[in-house]
Length: 129
Image (tube, rainbow, N blue to C red; front, side):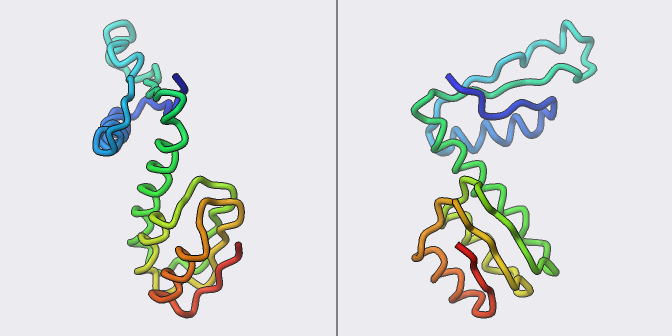
């Protein structure tokens, strides 16, 4: 198994767990009962592990889901996603960013089809691949 997330934010652990459940990716949360030892201070980080063969799919899922949080940044003009695991599905979350001028998707999983679809929604955007 490989570590996917390490945090002491229990809400994040829950959200990531729900995303993984929805995608039918088996996962294991370690150290979730350590609050007994630390006195509920939240100092010890919890870890989410996934099977080795699911690690890549889980990373893509989290990266694409994370882009959904940018939808409210209406003044965003430049976005650099260089070297991330973002895919065409993640780009769909950016379609409402009407002020986006330049998007860098170099060394990502985004292909020409995803770029074309984004340019339909945002004709003024320049995409660097």
